[in-house]
Figure 1 (cartoon, protein in one colour):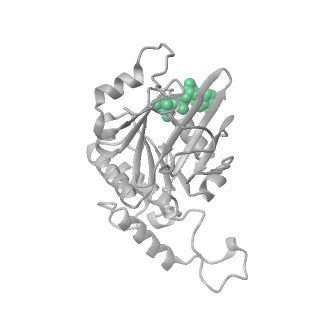
Figure 2 (cartoon, protein in one colour):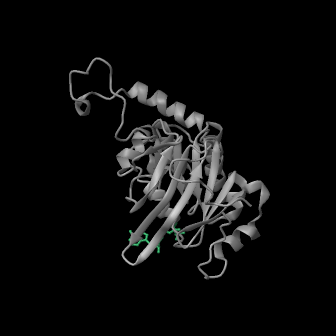
Figure 3 (cartoon, protein in one colour):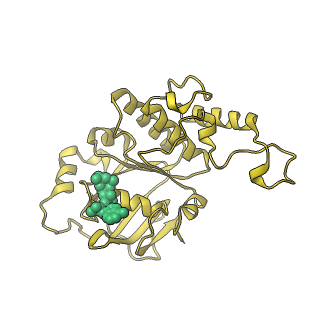
Length: 273
Ligand SMILES: Nc1ncnc2c1ncn2[C@@H]1O[C@H](COP(=O)(O)OP(=O)(O)OP(=O)(O)O)[C@@H](O)[C@H]1O
Ligand SMILES: [Mg+2]
């Protein structure tokens, strides 16, 4: 087992990490949701984030995505400190989050959903403000095809299908494809398979593997240890708002993870360094 908290200080994040966060704290009233968390993910890696209910997983994700402002702490991309105060900051840095409730538009087709808010516009209309330029349907369709093909979203009949008619697995895959279509390098997935059956879960796990192959840094939250062992390279365990351990998935097993997630309610950290 390696440990979660071994960095020297705020100016020396490890070289290999694409995204790293240091000493992130977040309090909600009397609840200390994050107690000085250190966390990192590399490119071409799926980092699973596990912990019992209320451990702080979603809160950590949301601070990285700029949806929640951390009370304290530092964010680094490729070793350089960055400021993440708003969702816009995170998007500009190539960080995308996919929530479980996907915020897709049921009445629009897959292609339109992929480009919500950043649709390509037709050339030659640049004299108009962006919002008034006609949409470039052909470019949009080509790029949607490309995103769906790149992630190999299976069983999708057509990018012209209305999202309202898709299965949960297909929707989740489309939401992920949308995040990836926006020039992202970090993809944060908060329980993408929680509501899905076996076949749909497999579809989403395949997309997550494709994200690793396309050199994204992927953070994957799930309560399903079987999925985690299938898809992750490393596993970070949170307990009561602290990072208590980081494992190489190949070097651990589900029993060890469960012990790390739940070890007593003693408030004693497992950290060695
Ligand atoms: N907006 C909020 N307002 C107040 N308390 C919050 C808020 N968001 C989270 N919390 C609290 O912070 C703690 C961590 O919550 P968080 O949602 O990050 O846990 P989690 O690890 O994602 O749990 P789960 O597995 O149940 O999704 C919990 O005690 C939760 O009640
Ligand atoms: Mg959560």
